[in-house]
Image 1: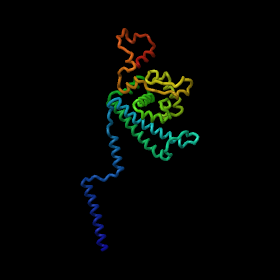
Image 2: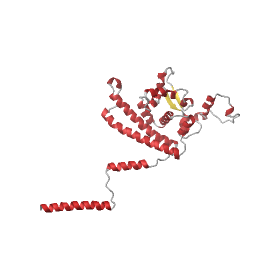
Image 3: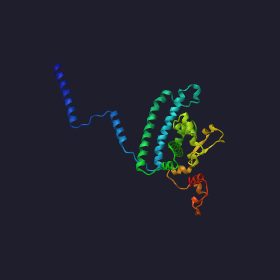
Image 4: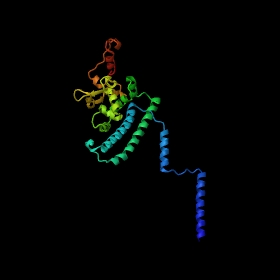
Length: 282
């Protein structure tokens, strides 16, 4: 009896091995584990060609998704740092999460931010080769804006399109308006970098001198510390241009009329800076 059982076991194992060989020889697809399937899907997704943006609004929507993910990660990181700081430095603590819960959530937010930024960068690079010139690129070229200034315009335009985005950004500097500190925090600038970046918000800066942004003071500007109490807003003309709308602003249409010019603009006797300021709004 024992010998028969051994023979039957040997026969079944032999048949299983031969069946496996036959399946492989016949071209059967090997069974995939879940992790293998995920890796292959990620590789195929990475090989997909990104699509050019359909419009300026489509571009802004893509940029806003990445900016919101970054702001959410910065907010959680800031809250975790506050929780781990000495009690006298914490201040008001509204969160119900403990440090372990925050530590578990932070890598997920980092990955989401990284994935969205890569997608944004790839799509923007592809669009610049295949698509039309984006309004934000045209503006940066015209006024020689750098990446920091470009970011200020994008974030400020996003505030006009989404209350949720404005709320998320407000949480990273504990305010409800966009201030210079909002952009310093968003770019994770060090103290020395913040000091050097203050010139971006001076009256002679490219953003303010060309009426791309406006600065509102709650009171008279007295000293350097007042810079963090000002609110920054994108001008309506700039916002409309970023959306692809180049029509004359409604504010001008209310009290403007079309007149036949009696002289060319080159013949007008004005300081060069004043001429550039006029041209920036017409």
